[in-house]
Image (cartoon, rainbow, N blue to C red; front, side, top):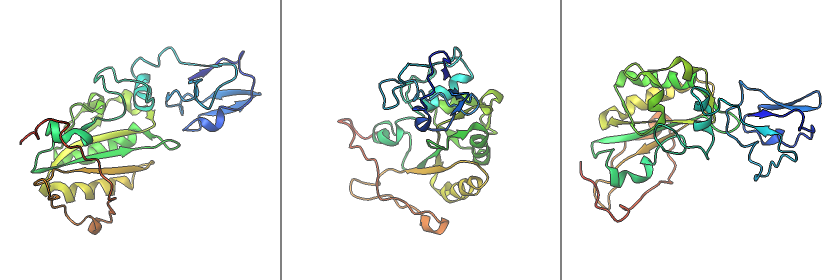
Length: 243
């Protein structure tokens, strides 16, 4: 985002609402640090609580052009990824697996959500995680927009343009065989110590029968405290897809 200095009155109303603290004051005018800005659009949506009194915010001309568009599509909830036509940072897989069957009964699905408002994440940190996971030959979810940012998916490396971008958050999604779960989680936790952001983990599993939860290794041995909440759909009126 940019600010029209002729329109800005220096009220500072926008500053506390920027989720990555990219806005500051200089010579009684608000300015946006272009390196820090993730193009989430919060400051420019005048129907929000921000409400710039002079509508001084406007988008960069290249905001929908690669590679600056990476910031917008992974940070602005109102934007839709050009390649996947999917809004948001990942897919709906965690909510629709009972229909799609992408995670079969011999697998676990894992989602790593890196970054959060006020912290964000860089794709240099994301690459640290994808490169660490590459030794397990994980297959990344094909409908996840991060799929289009790989330079070499087998090595887990991202394009040089992507490595220069920061976003509110991004989600890494992939499946692992059940016997790989523990070493994969150990790798994620060790790699997490080397990155400069926060991350959360999702574990996706299929019910073994309508009344039985799948067997999951004792995550407490890894220092993980799983939350009891879950996202469960009941087939949405369609049969459960078989393996």
